[in-house]
Length: 295
Image (cartoon, rainbow, N blue to C red; front, side, top):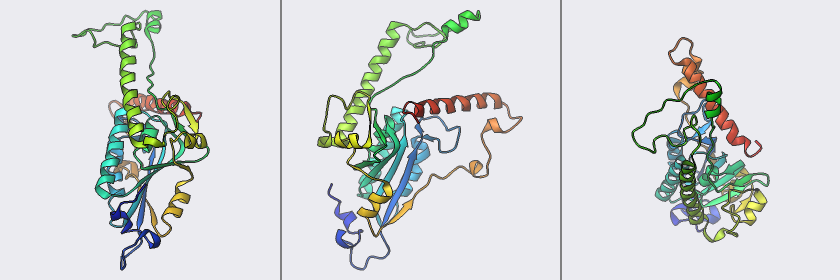
């Protein structure tokens, strides 16, 4: 990839530092870690969404002597919409700053996690990283047998025949499954198009890349899903030897910095039990997302 002139003017020595430039160039390092979800996290920094990372990304692209931005990705995926929103924001900031973006896959960059990695111009992985899962998945529970066993009657009233699709307390309908499958196929096509757009002719295969499979780092490199094997520290030190690697962290809310939790942790507040249940369910869903990759 050719580094834009606006960038090389900031880089040291052989990369063309402007004579008389003051200070070392900066490489911003941003960690994108967690399940991708629009919902708030039960634990700070456990969930990724545009709201939680946008300010961090903006600060990462803000330094005057910015040479590059590194994304350290560790995510099993999640919301397609939040993945797209974050990826698009990274690309818009990169275009404004005219700096290269490098992504580094850690334990896992799968599904939406790989979507985020594709927002970079180059992708690197460890030999043990799990990469890929270019597919769409939906999960739920069927509780109609359970409530029947306990003698519970489901009462549901709608205006519009499609409002009760996939209700977990009602028997599953074939037409609802067909609707969901069609929706998944549309999302899969969008995911595939994004990967093709960002990776281009670096992709080495076509039949197995988009079936939801995952690979370790070296095989992912052979397939063109990543550009090389290496850690963020090693690659950035080699590429930008005179640059300051500056970690840009997400700023925690004031209550979190003071050690206070949500409503569930504050005795006596209305809705505390419901909030605790919501947070527990969120934690279980996040755990299940990681567990799909043996983590």
